[in-house]
Length: 384
Image 1 (spheres, helix red, strand yellow):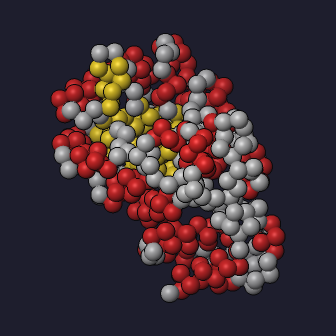
Image 2 (cartoon, helix red, strand yellow):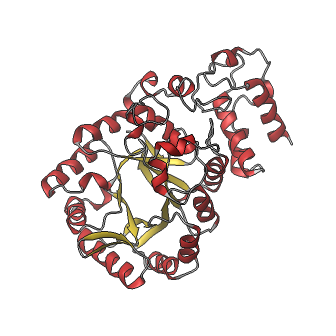
Protein backbone atom coordinates (compact mmCIF):
# COMPACT_ATOMS: atom_id res chain seq x y z
CA UNK A 1 0.00 0.00 0.00
CA UNK A 2 1.20 3.50 -0.83
CA UNK A 3 0.53 6.38 1.53
CA UNK A 4 -0.03 10.08 0.88
CA UNK A 5 -0.21 13.17 3.05
CA UNK A 6 -3.78 14.37 3.57
CA UNK A 7 -3.15 17.95 2.49
CA UNK A 8 -2.41 20.48 5.21
CA UNK A 9 -3.67 18.15 7.95
CA UNK A 10 -0.31 16.36 7.77
CA UNK A 11 -2.01 12.99 8.34
CA UNK A 12 -0.52 10.07 6.40
CA UNK A 13 -3.28 8.06 4.72
CA UNK A 14 -3.50 4.99 2.53
CA UNK A 15 -4.18 5.96 -1.07
CA UNK A 16 -6.96 3.36 -1.12
CA UNK A 17 -9.63 3.74 1.56
CA UNK A 18 -12.90 2.02 2.38
CA UNK A 19 -16.33 3.58 2.10
CA UNK A 20 -19.12 2.55 4.44
CA UNK A 21 -21.78 1.58 1.88
CA UNK A 22 -20.20 -1.87 1.97
CA UNK A 23 -21.72 -2.43 5.42
CA UNK A 24 -25.34 -1.61 4.56
CA UNK A 25 -27.61 -4.56 5.24
CA UNK A 26 -24.74 -6.73 6.54
CA UNK A 27 -24.28 -8.26 9.97
CA UNK A 28 -21.43 -7.58 12.38
CA UNK A 29 -19.53 -10.75 11.49
CA UNK A 30 -19.35 -9.60 7.88
CA UNK A 31 -18.29 -6.11 8.99
CA UNK A 32 -15.49 -7.36 11.26
CA UNK A 33 -14.15 -9.62 8.53
CA UNK A 34 -14.10 -6.69 6.08
CA UNK A 35 -12.31 -4.46 8.60
CA UNK A 36 -9.68 -7.14 9.18
CA UNK A 37 -9.18 -7.52 5.44
CA UNK A 38 -8.76 -3.77 5.06
CA UNK A 39 -6.27 -3.41 7.91
CA UNK A 40 -4.15 -6.35 6.73
CA UNK A 41 -4.05 -4.78 3.26
CA UNK A 42 -2.65 -1.57 4.74
CA UNK A 43 -5.83 0.50 4.55
CA UNK A 44 -6.10 3.07 7.34
CA UNK A 45 -8.68 5.54 5.96
CA UNK A 46 -12.38 4.91 6.45
CA UNK A 47 -15.45 6.97 5.54
CA UNK A 48 -18.49 6.78 7.79
CA UNK A 49 -21.42 8.73 6.44
CA UNK A 50 -23.98 6.16 7.54
CA UNK A 51 -26.18 6.91 10.55
CA UNK A 52 -27.46 3.32 10.85
CA UNK A 53 -26.87 2.27 14.47
CA UNK A 54 -25.62 -1.22 13.61
CA UNK A 55 -22.99 0.16 11.21
CA UNK A 56 -21.72 2.65 13.78
CA UNK A 57 -21.64 -0.15 16.36
CA UNK A 58 -19.54 -2.30 14.02
CA UNK A 59 -17.07 0.54 13.49
CA UNK A 60 -16.80 1.01 17.25
CA UNK A 61 -16.19 -2.69 17.84
CA UNK A 62 -13.51 -2.80 15.12
CA UNK A 63 -11.71 0.25 16.54
CA UNK A 64 -11.71 -0.95 20.15
CA UNK A 65 -8.14 -1.29 21.46
CA UNK A 66 -6.58 -0.06 18.20
CA UNK A 67 -8.00 3.41 17.60
CA UNK A 68 -4.66 4.59 16.16
CA UNK A 69 -5.04 2.25 13.17
CA UNK A 70 -8.20 4.04 12.00
CA UNK A 71 -8.37 7.47 10.39
CA UNK A 72 -12.09 8.19 10.41
CA UNK A 73 -13.93 10.60 8.13
CA UNK A 74 -17.30 10.81 9.92
CA UNK A 75 -20.18 12.97 8.70
CA UNK A 76 -22.12 15.71 10.44
CA UNK A 77 -25.78 16.19 9.43
CA UNK A 78 -26.41 12.51 8.72
CA UNK A 79 -29.13 11.13 11.01
CA UNK A 80 -31.21 7.99 11.59
CA UNK A 81 -34.83 9.10 11.95
CA UNK A 82 -37.69 6.60 12.37
CA UNK A 83 -35.66 3.83 10.79
CA UNK A 84 -34.49 5.91 7.82
CA UNK A 85 -31.30 7.70 6.80
CA UNK A 86 -31.81 11.45 6.42
CA UNK A 87 -29.56 14.38 5.65
CA UNK A 88 -30.59 17.12 8.06
CA UNK A 89 -29.74 20.72 8.96
CA UNK A 90 -31.98 20.76 12.04
CA UNK A 91 -29.47 21.46 14.80
CA UNK A 92 -31.16 19.47 17.54
CA UNK A 93 -31.12 16.43 15.28
CA UNK A 94 -27.58 17.13 14.03
CA UNK A 95 -26.23 17.30 17.58
CA UNK A 96 -28.07 14.23 18.88
CA UNK A 97 -26.93 12.22 15.83
CA UNK A 98 -23.29 13.20 16.41
CA UNK A 99 -23.56 12.40 20.11
CA UNK A 100 -24.87 9.00 19.06
CA UNK A 101 -21.87 8.63 16.72
CA UNK A 102 -19.37 9.17 19.54
CA UNK A 103 -21.21 6.79 21.87
CA UNK A 104 -21.28 4.02 19.33
CA UNK A 105 -17.71 4.53 18.11
CA UNK A 106 -16.51 4.61 21.74
CA UNK A 107 -13.98 7.27 20.83
CA UNK A 108 -13.17 10.76 22.11
CA UNK A 109 -12.52 12.19 18.65
CA UNK A 110 -12.86 11.69 14.92
CA UNK A 111 -10.10 12.75 12.56
CA UNK A 112 -12.32 14.46 9.96
CA UNK A 113 -15.73 15.90 10.73
CA UNK A 114 -17.34 16.08 7.31
CA UNK A 115 -20.29 18.39 6.71
CA UNK A 116 -22.49 16.01 4.79
CA UNK A 117 -23.64 16.37 1.18
CA UNK A 118 -23.72 20.05 0.20
CA UNK A 119 -24.58 20.30 -3.51
CA UNK A 120 -26.93 23.30 -3.79
CA UNK A 121 -26.02 26.97 -3.48
CA UNK A 122 -28.84 27.76 -1.08
CA UNK A 123 -27.79 24.84 1.11
CA UNK A 124 -24.15 25.98 1.05
CA UNK A 125 -25.22 29.47 2.15
CA UNK A 126 -27.35 28.02 4.93
CA UNK A 127 -24.53 25.78 6.16
CA UNK A 128 -21.68 28.28 6.00
CA UNK A 129 -23.65 31.26 7.26
CA UNK A 130 -25.52 29.45 10.01
CA UNK A 131 -25.33 27.09 12.97
CA UNK A 132 -23.92 24.05 11.15
CA UNK A 133 -20.47 25.55 10.56
CA UNK A 134 -20.61 27.12 14.05
CA UNK A 135 -21.20 23.66 15.55
CA UNK A 136 -18.34 22.20 13.49
CA UNK A 137 -16.04 24.93 14.83
CA UNK A 138 -17.24 24.18 18.36
CA UNK A 139 -16.44 20.48 17.97
CA UNK A 140 -13.02 21.29 16.58
CA UNK A 141 -12.23 23.71 19.42
CA UNK A 142 -13.19 20.99 21.89
CA UNK A 143 -10.93 18.46 20.17
CA UNK A 144 -13.82 16.17 19.25
CA UNK A 145 -12.99 16.58 15.57
CA UNK A 146 -9.42 17.22 14.46
CA UNK A 147 -10.22 18.80 11.09
CA UNK A 148 -13.35 20.05 9.31
CA UNK A 149 -14.29 18.69 5.90
CA UNK A 150 -17.25 18.64 3.54
CA UNK A 151 -18.71 16.25 0.97
CA UNK A 152 -20.14 17.41 -2.36
CA UNK A 153 -20.64 16.34 -5.98
CA UNK A 154 -20.71 19.92 -7.29
CA UNK A 155 -17.36 21.53 -8.21
CA UNK A 156 -18.83 25.02 -7.95
CA UNK A 157 -19.79 24.38 -4.32
CA UNK A 158 -16.47 22.66 -3.62
CA UNK A 159 -14.56 25.72 -4.85
CA UNK A 160 -16.50 27.97 -2.47
CA UNK A 161 -15.78 25.60 0.41
CA UNK A 162 -12.08 25.57 -0.45
CA UNK A 163 -12.04 29.37 -0.46
CA UNK A 164 -13.90 29.64 2.86
CA UNK A 165 -10.83 28.95 4.97
CA UNK A 166 -12.88 26.51 7.07
CA UNK A 167 -12.31 23.29 5.16
CA UNK A 168 -9.20 21.07 5.13
CA UNK A 169 -10.60 18.07 3.23
CA UNK A 170 -13.26 17.80 0.52
CA UNK A 171 -14.87 14.48 -0.30
CA UNK A 172 -15.64 14.80 -4.01
CA UNK A 173 -16.95 12.51 -6.77
CA UNK A 174 -14.20 11.97 -9.33
CA UNK A 175 -13.99 9.75 -12.40
CA UNK A 176 -13.47 10.43 -16.14
CA UNK A 177 -17.21 10.45 -16.85
CA UNK A 178 -18.13 13.01 -14.20
CA UNK A 179 -15.09 15.12 -15.09
CA UNK A 180 -16.46 16.01 -18.54
CA UNK A 181 -19.76 17.33 -17.13
CA UNK A 182 -20.51 20.95 -16.18
CA UNK A 183 -21.54 21.68 -12.56
CA UNK A 184 -25.02 20.52 -11.55
CA UNK A 185 -26.96 20.74 -8.30
CA UNK A 186 -28.79 17.45 -8.95
CA UNK A 187 -26.50 14.51 -8.20
CA UNK A 188 -28.95 12.06 -9.77
CA UNK A 189 -28.17 13.39 -13.26
CA UNK A 190 -24.60 12.13 -12.94
CA UNK A 191 -25.87 8.58 -13.30
CA UNK A 192 -28.15 9.16 -16.28
CA UNK A 193 -26.88 8.30 -19.77
CA UNK A 194 -29.04 11.06 -21.25
CA UNK A 195 -26.89 13.61 -19.37
CA UNK A 196 -24.00 12.77 -21.69
CA UNK A 197 -26.01 13.73 -24.76
CA UNK A 198 -26.07 17.40 -23.75
CA UNK A 199 -24.40 20.06 -25.89
CA UNK A 200 -22.20 21.19 -23.00
CA UNK A 201 -20.56 17.79 -22.41
CA UNK A 202 -16.85 18.05 -23.17
CA UNK A 203 -14.12 15.80 -24.56
CA UNK A 204 -11.81 16.94 -21.78
CA UNK A 205 -12.09 17.95 -18.13
CA UNK A 206 -14.65 20.65 -17.38
CA UNK A 207 -12.94 24.00 -16.58
CA UNK A 208 -14.59 24.36 -13.17
CA UNK A 209 -13.39 20.93 -12.14
CA UNK A 210 -9.90 21.86 -13.30
CA UNK A 211 -10.17 25.04 -11.24
CA UNK A 212 -11.18 23.00 -8.18
CA UNK A 213 -8.25 20.59 -8.54
CA UNK A 214 -5.87 23.50 -9.04
CA UNK A 215 -7.15 25.47 -6.06
CA UNK A 216 -7.01 22.47 -3.74
CA UNK A 217 -3.49 21.57 -4.88
CA UNK A 218 -2.16 25.09 -4.36
CA UNK A 219 -3.93 25.54 -0.98
CA UNK A 220 -3.05 22.01 0.23
CA UNK A 221 -6.70 21.09 0.66
CA UNK A 222 -6.95 17.33 0.26
CA UNK A 223 -9.50 15.61 -1.94
CA UNK A 224 -10.85 12.21 -0.92
CA UNK A 225 -12.68 10.48 -3.73
CA UNK A 226 -16.13 8.95 -3.80
CA UNK A 227 -17.78 7.32 -6.82
CA UNK A 228 -14.49 6.31 -8.52
CA UNK A 229 -16.41 3.73 -10.59
CA UNK A 230 -19.41 6.00 -11.24
CA UNK A 231 -21.69 3.79 -9.17
CA UNK A 232 -20.38 0.79 -11.12
CA UNK A 233 -21.41 2.23 -14.51
CA UNK A 234 -17.83 2.67 -15.72
CA UNK A 235 -17.15 -1.04 -15.18
CA UNK A 236 -19.98 -2.01 -17.57
CA UNK A 237 -19.74 -1.24 -21.30
CA UNK A 238 -23.53 -1.14 -21.56
CA UNK A 239 -23.85 1.44 -18.78
CA UNK A 240 -20.73 3.53 -19.38
CA UNK A 241 -21.23 6.82 -21.26
CA UNK A 242 -18.00 6.00 -23.11
CA UNK A 243 -19.42 2.77 -24.58
CA UNK A 244 -16.56 0.68 -23.19
CA UNK A 245 -15.81 -0.86 -19.82
CA UNK A 246 -12.96 0.36 -17.66
CA UNK A 247 -11.29 -1.84 -15.07
CA UNK A 248 -11.27 -0.98 -11.39
CA UNK A 249 -7.52 -0.37 -11.57
CA UNK A 250 -7.94 2.09 -14.47
CA UNK A 251 -10.59 4.02 -12.54
CA UNK A 252 -8.42 4.16 -9.43
CA UNK A 253 -5.40 5.29 -11.44
CA UNK A 254 -7.40 8.05 -13.09
CA UNK A 255 -8.45 9.38 -9.69
CA UNK A 256 -5.01 9.09 -8.13
CA UNK A 257 -3.39 11.05 -10.98
CA UNK A 258 -5.69 14.06 -10.44
CA UNK A 259 -4.17 16.99 -8.51
CA UNK A 260 -4.81 17.19 -4.74
CA UNK A 261 -6.20 13.65 -4.45
CA UNK A 262 -4.98 11.89 -1.31
CA UNK A 263 -7.25 8.85 -1.02
CA UNK A 264 -9.79 7.00 -3.15
CA UNK A 265 -12.60 5.33 -1.23
CA UNK A 266 -13.20 2.08 -3.05
CA UNK A 267 -16.74 0.89 -3.52
CA UNK A 268 -16.08 -2.64 -2.30
CA UNK A 269 -19.02 -4.90 -1.51
CA UNK A 270 -16.95 -8.03 -0.82
CA UNK A 271 -13.53 -8.91 0.55
CA UNK A 272 -12.49 -9.87 -2.97
CA UNK A 273 -13.42 -6.47 -4.38
CA UNK A 274 -11.63 -4.75 -1.51
CA UNK A 275 -8.47 -6.77 -2.06
CA UNK A 276 -8.59 -6.01 -5.78
CA UNK A 277 -8.63 -2.29 -5.02
CA UNK A 278 -5.99 -2.58 -2.30
CA UNK A 279 -3.64 -4.38 -4.71
CA UNK A 280 -3.59 -1.30 -6.98
CA UNK A 281 -0.09 -0.21 -5.94
CA UNK A 282 1.36 -3.62 -6.79
CA UNK A 283 0.02 -3.71 -10.34
CA UNK A 284 2.29 -3.10 -13.34
CA UNK A 285 1.75 0.17 -15.18
CA UNK A 286 0.04 -1.48 -18.14
CA UNK A 287 -2.72 -2.81 -15.86
CA UNK A 288 -3.48 0.71 -14.57
CA UNK A 289 -3.18 2.51 -17.90
CA UNK A 290 -6.38 4.27 -18.97
CA UNK A 291 -4.87 6.26 -21.86
CA UNK A 292 -5.51 3.90 -24.77
CA UNK A 293 -9.08 3.33 -23.66
CA UNK A 294 -10.08 6.98 -23.09
CA UNK A 295 -8.39 8.16 -26.27
CA UNK A 296 -10.26 5.67 -28.46
CA UNK A 297 -13.70 5.41 -26.88
CA UNK A 298 -16.77 5.26 -29.17
CA UNK A 299 -18.22 8.31 -27.36
CA UNK A 300 -16.62 11.36 -25.71
CA UNK A 301 -13.10 10.57 -26.82
CA UNK A 302 -10.61 12.62 -24.83
CA UNK A 303 -8.49 14.74 -27.18
CA UNK A 304 -5.81 17.48 -27.10
CA UNK A 305 -5.79 17.62 -23.33
CA UNK A 306 -2.96 16.21 -21.24
CA UNK A 307 -4.25 13.43 -18.99
CA UNK A 308 -0.87 13.04 -17.20
CA UNK A 309 -0.67 9.42 -18.33
CA UNK A 310 3.07 9.51 -19.14
CA UNK A 311 2.88 7.92 -22.58
CA UNK A 312 4.89 10.84 -23.97
CA UNK A 313 7.98 9.67 -22.06
CA UNK A 314 10.88 9.37 -22.37
CA UNK A 315 11.66 12.92 -23.40
CA UNK A 316 14.79 13.31 -25.53
CA UNK A 317 16.24 15.86 -23.10
CA UNK A 318 14.72 14.48 -19.90
CA UNK A 319 11.70 16.76 -19.33
CA UNK A 320 8.98 15.21 -17.16
CA UNK A 321 6.34 16.35 -19.64
CA UNK A 322 3.28 15.13 -17.73
CA UNK A 323 4.39 16.93 -14.57
CA UNK A 324 5.21 20.15 -16.42
CA UNK A 325 1.77 20.04 -18.06
CA UNK A 326 0.10 19.40 -14.71
CA UNK A 327 1.81 22.42 -13.11
CA UNK A 328 0.98 24.63 -16.11
CA UNK A 329 -2.66 23.49 -16.07
CA UNK A 330 -2.92 24.27 -12.36
CA UNK A 331 -1.79 27.84 -13.07
CA UNK A 332 -4.00 28.27 -16.13
CA UNK A 333 -7.07 27.13 -14.18
CA UNK A 334 -6.52 29.86 -11.56
CA UNK A 335 -5.22 32.51 -13.98
CA UNK A 336 -2.21 32.96 -11.72
CA UNK A 337 0.93 31.16 -10.54
CA UNK A 338 0.45 29.98 -6.95
CA UNK A 339 3.72 30.06 -5.03
CA UNK A 340 3.44 26.40 -4.07
CA UNK A 341 3.16 25.43 -7.75
CA UNK A 342 6.05 27.69 -8.72
CA UNK A 343 8.20 26.06 -6.04
CA UNK A 344 7.34 22.58 -7.32
CA UNK A 345 8.08 23.61 -10.91
CA UNK A 346 11.40 25.19 -9.94
CA UNK A 347 12.39 21.96 -8.18
CA UNK A 348 12.21 19.99 -11.47
CA UNK A 349 15.62 18.93 -12.73
CA UNK A 350 14.71 19.70 -16.35
CA UNK A 351 12.21 22.42 -17.16
CA UNK A 352 10.14 23.30 -20.21
CA UNK A 353 12.86 25.68 -21.45
CA UNK A 354 14.96 22.65 -22.40
CA UNK A 355 12.50 21.48 -25.09
CA UNK A 356 14.26 21.07 -28.46
CA UNK A 357 10.96 20.58 -30.34
CA UNK A 358 11.94 17.21 -31.73
CA UNK A 359 8.31 16.02 -31.66
CA UNK A 360 9.07 12.48 -30.47
CA UNK A 361 6.67 12.91 -27.55
CA UNK A 362 3.79 14.01 -29.79
CA UNK A 363 4.05 10.81 -31.83
CA UNK A 364 3.57 8.78 -28.65
CA UNK A 365 0.71 10.82 -27.11
CA UNK A 366 -2.62 8.91 -27.35
CA UNK A 367 -4.60 12.13 -26.78
CA UNK A 368 -3.10 14.10 -29.70
CA UNK A 369 -1.78 16.77 -27.34
CA UNK A 370 0.27 19.46 -29.06
CA UNK A 371 3.09 19.01 -26.58
CA UNK A 372 5.55 21.41 -28.19
CA UNK A 373 2.95 24.19 -27.87
CA UNK A 374 2.27 23.15 -24.28
CA UNK A 375 5.97 23.42 -23.43
CA UNK A 376 6.02 26.90 -24.92
CA UNK A 377 2.99 27.88 -22.81
CA UNK A 378 4.70 26.47 -19.71
CA UNK A 379 7.78 28.58 -20.43
CA UNK A 380 5.61 31.67 -20.73
CA UNK A 381 3.76 30.90 -17.50
CA UNK A 382 6.77 30.22 -15.32
CA UNK A 383 9.18 32.73 -16.84
CA UNK A 384 6.77 35.67 -16.64
